[in-house]
Length: 450
Image (tube, rainbow, N blue to C red; front, side):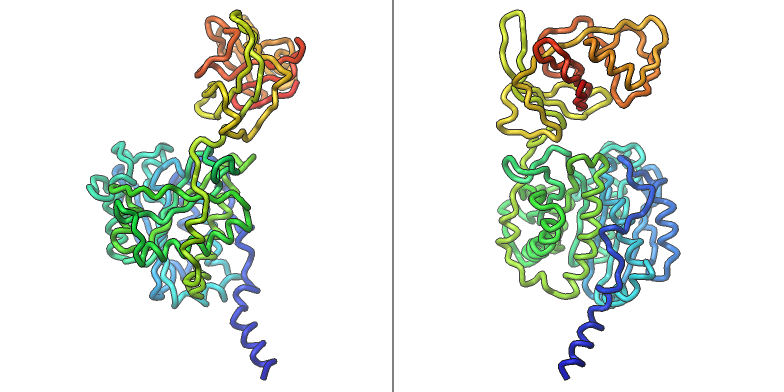
């Protein structure tokens, strides 16, 4: 009798044993900083040919690009996921491609069949294709879709609202990217994944649907902490009247915001992409097993809050500045923003921020460097550039088009005068010296040991 019970149990869990690992299941060609409609189109066309998936056109963007939804399953538990509401927030779109291809993989057929009649999925991989094409937050009208839930002045916002009212999801997953500089709590690690169960009123009360979102997040947070310990944070839950997450929460949808953030040495957010696709699979397993119902809301509330600007790309601590007015010590912070990053902060920075790259410079002094004059074409190899940096050249004067830059480093145009002091919003191109010898060069957010 016991032997038969064990066999039945193993058979009931066979989908877990035979499924391919979602952690390594990845669609090729999407490890890039920008995901555009043309990147997704061939993947979506391929997915739509599978018998388990139904593709439906919801309508068009402002510029006439199609916006499609993909449906899987026919069960009573309904889950809606949408991505790239902000066109330059790409991570979840790639993760959804991984997830959908995982769902239809033949090796996962048993797992898929275990929930197809228990749960229904609606996935909108790219709700703002115009913004994605331009890699801008906004749609082609210049409107932030996530501030259009009430007025519905964008065709994309209208389609998203109509989809929610038609599908009537129990759970909604609002998938975004956040900037790279959030921390998971005070002086915490980078917030690789941030979560939120949005408020449905100004009082931020917890009703049944919002409480369910908190419980499911609490259950899913165990996976996040297992994969990237101490990289999980929680967004401030101030009520945002115009936003879709808060509006869907008002409508009784248990809404879950997932924001993909940075992880050290991961410029295209492939770590957050992996966590996302793992979360979608785990979400299905949790909802059909009902385990999440046993979670405590207090577990969600204990997740540390996101701390804004807790990290910078390059932080140089305690560098000495030899100014005409006398020497002093400062920290220098640089973020990789724009084509030519600038110094974005000076002063006491290390007491409240951390650097993805960080240097203790208490034995070093700042040198703005010299201008290398361009009089003829210059083939700038890495070795040639290093020689110039050692000689104290930090930037170039003249016509920069004469440079054939074959190195991995930026070539800065010199200002009219090179100040002895670093300046806020000044060029992030300078030399760090120790007793007169050039030890490091800074070009953008890159710290180069000489």
